[in-house]
Length: 202
Ligand code: HEM
Ligand code: HEM
Image (cartoon, rainbow, N blue to C red):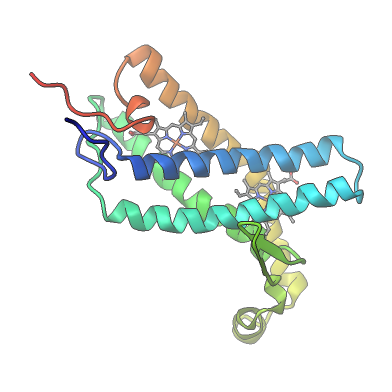
């Protein structure tokens, strides 16, 4: 009798890595939908606009926690082997994955660091705005000698410009590559991120 593998193997992602991937992917893309829906379709300063914004921050901060857990889990697991392809293709795939990990940390983090209001974690606990924390006073005001305005501007810039011009393109290329592997190359790349698969018996 075969059991579903929780851990990765050399051949496939395991159930835990798969759940992490899709929770983060859904939350990330969902957070785009929420903030642009608010920007494009909702009258500013209404209750709906404010609720959508607190959804955005709460989901975003929760993503950060999932990503940290996900990275810890990644280091505790073997990594599935590359499917056959050229060196350039393997380099592009690994490069894109590293960039995605950086983005998954930097985007929510700069969102939190640059926000002038409190946020929630998993919609359960209120976390104070960064400007009210001891870290802000010690590190930003003390060591870096910056005011809130001086600190907030670059955080906002990375979050908004990065989000608006870079991150979604990276995600689109990544998702496109997965579909290309599945429908054109007809290999296991997408399947092994949908459910844990076992190597065929020869
Ligand atoms: C999954 C994580 C996140 C993603 C993908 C994301 C993405 C975005 C995008 C695309 C925008 C709109 C940029 C524009 O103005 O064109 C935005 C705006 C914003 N985000 Fe995030 N964000 C995330 C997490 C967070 C977090 C954790 C916070 C704060 C705790 C935050 C605070 C903000 C703020 C204050 C704005 C500006 C809102 C406005 O101008 O109305 N974001 N975000
Ligand atoms: C509909 C959208 C998406 C699809 C179809 C998709 C598909 C996939 C597939 C098939 C893999 C496995 C690649 C391999 O085995 O070499 C993968 C890995 C990965 N994906 Fe996605 N993905 C999507 C969205 C996202 C999003 C939104 C993010 C992050 C913001 C993301 C981050 C990653 C990362 C970091 C990996 C590497 C995992 C690792 O090896 O640790 N993906 N994705």
